[in-house]
Length: 74
Image (cartoon, rainbow, N blue to C red; front, side, top):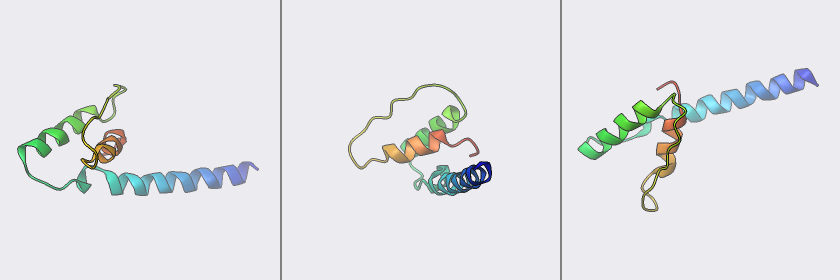
């Protein structure tokens, strides 16, 4: 059972790494002042234990920002 648990843990880690590459800051597109401010804020928040409330209209990328904030290796 320990071996199976370790295999599942390794698989989950691999999937998490793939998601991190997919949804990190590199996935953001744009050069506007607003997006630059957002990316700067994401960079400051990464690796902290600060609680963050991400607000905005539907379809504005709140989930993408949340995923990028949670990513530690950007």
